[in-house]
Length: 108
Picture 1 (cartoon, helix red, strand yellow):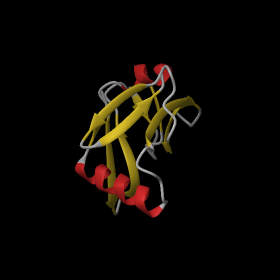
Picture 2: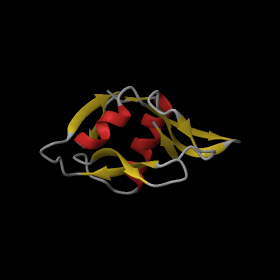
Picture 3: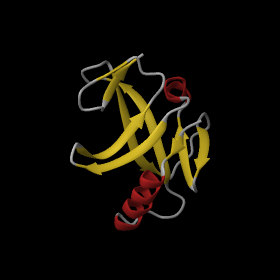
């Protein structure tokens, strides 16, 4: 399961509205090889639910995750920070044994 904080929920709804995404577009979270720690998060809007997607819902946000990525993301919380230390979505992932300084890549 992936959880969404209140700040992340508000930002997702704001971006969805600003970018003109229809209601049937959901958040897709994926993990791909790359980055300085070996694996990178990918976050995007997507209107297509694929046959092997796992679908989670938290605070009214539907989250689509492909079956390869789910193993890396179980228990993750999606947060949003707009503070002095950085602005953007952040993944709080209990499965990550190491993360890079920018927080965009990790290893298990």
